[in-house]
Image: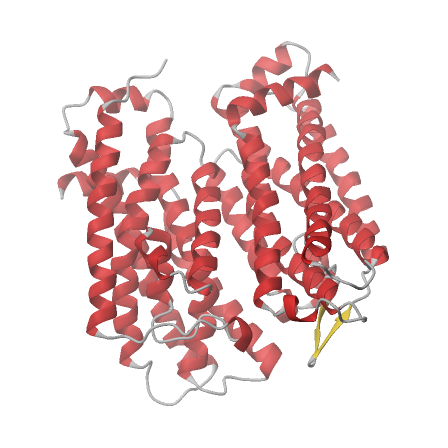
Length: 249
Length: 255
């Protein structure tokens, strides 16, 4: 617990609160803009909930466009400090092994990312009420998508924490984030196995609503695949950080 | 010029070539692949291929790529006491700032050249399109290169200020998102902001977003739009270089 608190203390100088705010406002802002630009305001009284569908479709798109790079930047900043200040060695000499330090970083950053992702959904639902959407909130879709996207964001965070810890040159990490952005945005043009093998592909897989032909419809979220991603991600993260513990700093 | 070549010596082992080559190649490949996957082909030939390639690239990736290149250029100065060496060198601050910005601008220009060559390669080899890429897109690319200069100068300044590699990249992504959104809502004054100038230049002769309800017809390529891009870029670059030089002049050594 003390190590996690220490990670929060490091964040103050790294301005990670600001980056988290950027993640939150970027996704909410882009979703709201897309909603208004797509004519959401003209269909507020649609009993089938067209306006909610627009918001959910926009959220799915915005999360895939913004989250991969900002989460990579958050992970990179938190780990970069250890590389530049020789923090790995310093921590190890005080009894905190590199693997344990990585797990503490994940726990601390996970709180930020999860809070921001929850807040995205809550603010957008509030915006929906605020602009006067008449139909009831599709609670199942909002809850399902929010849970799924939290798992995806945490998986991406875990991957980037490990990458930033292993590769000192953060160019490589940011380069991988840009490739992740491509996978998230252009997943529909990629083979399904590739989409399912990378955490970024899940941004596209969990999109809760989209146009099928000319109709905007709710899509089924593949909960089983998301659960598999969560379990595989947790297992691999634990395994790899356990190996860090046996590595010399 | 001597100082600019020194910057390229520093970049030799930095993997900057990977950004310059891979980013535009992946942009063109993914754009054309998604076009084929969703529509079954390039209905309007070179026009469709160009829009699919430059659309997302201009609205999100170009400034991010420039930001990564700028972070790379300043990375060496933030490591191993090099900042103090930089502070104590006899090279004028303005020359230092200009040479860094010029190195980033040259690399971003190469990125645009790679994008054009990749579009031509995909058009001729992968899609067997008739004729050649229309000349207006080559002109548009020259304007993109010009509009990338203030972004290069600004990102170079940010990378000088932030020791972190990733923070200036995140700033570029967010600033580009804001400026693209402003362009889509017809806030033309935003063109004065370097990120918007670059996005505006990439979309010349195209349409920003295909869906009619979010469309913002991009301007055509004319002497007026070319003059606007060149004028705004020159003014913004001058201001950014002066501010960056002033800031660096007031910086101190680091413990």
